[in-house]
Image (cartoon, rainbow, N blue to C red):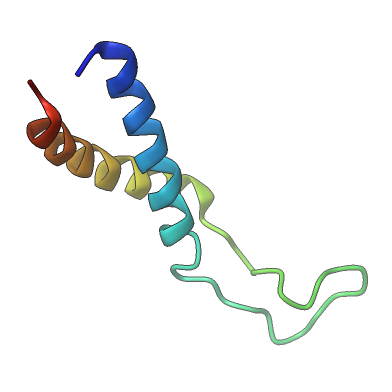
Length: 70
Protein backbone atom coordinates (compact mmCIF):
# COMPACT_ATOMS: atom_id res chain seq x y z
CA UNK A 1 0.00 0.00 0.00
CA UNK A 2 1.53 3.31 -1.05
CA UNK A 3 1.59 6.38 1.16
CA UNK A 4 -1.13 8.21 -0.80
CA UNK A 5 -3.45 5.19 -0.75
CA UNK A 6 -2.82 4.82 2.99
CA UNK A 7 -3.93 8.43 3.55
CA UNK A 8 -7.03 7.98 1.41
CA UNK A 9 -8.00 4.78 3.24
CA UNK A 10 -7.52 6.51 6.61
CA UNK A 11 -9.70 9.46 5.58
CA UNK A 12 -12.45 7.15 4.33
CA UNK A 13 -12.38 5.18 7.59
CA UNK A 14 -12.36 8.42 9.60
CA UNK A 15 -15.46 9.80 7.87
CA UNK A 16 -17.42 6.57 8.32
CA UNK A 17 -16.46 6.35 11.99
CA UNK A 18 -17.38 10.03 12.50
CA UNK A 19 -20.92 9.37 11.27
CA UNK A 20 -21.13 6.44 13.70
CA UNK A 21 -19.83 8.50 16.65
CA UNK A 22 -21.86 11.69 16.08
CA UNK A 23 -25.09 10.46 17.74
CA UNK A 24 -23.31 9.42 20.97
CA UNK A 25 -24.38 11.47 23.99
CA UNK A 26 -26.78 13.78 22.16
CA UNK A 27 -29.35 15.28 24.51
CA UNK A 28 -32.31 17.30 23.28
CA UNK A 29 -33.18 20.27 25.56
CA UNK A 30 -36.49 20.21 27.42
CA UNK A 31 -37.19 23.86 26.65
CA UNK A 32 -36.84 24.79 22.98
CA UNK A 33 -35.73 28.38 22.40
CA UNK A 34 -37.38 30.36 19.61
CA UNK A 35 -35.45 30.13 16.36
CA UNK A 36 -33.77 26.81 17.22
CA UNK A 37 -34.54 23.47 15.62
CA UNK A 38 -36.43 21.07 17.86
CA UNK A 39 -33.73 18.45 17.30
CA UNK A 40 -30.74 20.71 18.09
CA UNK A 41 -28.59 19.20 20.86
CA UNK A 42 -27.73 21.08 24.05
CA UNK A 43 -24.00 20.46 23.67
CA UNK A 44 -22.52 18.49 20.80
CA UNK A 45 -19.05 17.80 22.32
CA UNK A 46 -17.65 17.88 18.79
CA UNK A 47 -14.00 18.10 19.88
CA UNK A 48 -14.32 14.97 22.02
CA UNK A 49 -16.10 13.18 19.18
CA UNK A 50 -13.29 14.12 16.76
CA UNK A 51 -10.74 12.72 19.22
CA UNK A 52 -12.67 9.47 19.69
CA UNK A 53 -13.12 9.20 15.92
CA UNK A 54 -9.40 9.68 15.35
CA UNK A 55 -8.44 6.99 17.87
CA UNK A 56 -10.94 4.43 16.57
CA UNK A 57 -9.98 5.22 12.96
CA UNK A 58 -6.30 4.76 13.69
CA UNK A 59 -6.99 1.33 15.19
CA UNK A 60 -9.11 0.30 12.20
CA UNK A 61 -6.53 1.71 9.75
CA UNK A 62 -3.79 -0.42 11.33
CA UNK A 63 -5.95 -3.50 10.84
CA UNK A 64 -6.63 -2.51 7.21
CA UNK A 65 -2.92 -1.87 6.66
CA UNK A 66 -1.98 -5.28 8.00
CA UNK A 67 -4.54 -6.92 5.72
CA UNK A 68 -3.71 -4.89 2.57
CA UNK A 69 0.08 -4.67 2.78
CA UNK A 70 2.02 -6.43 0.04
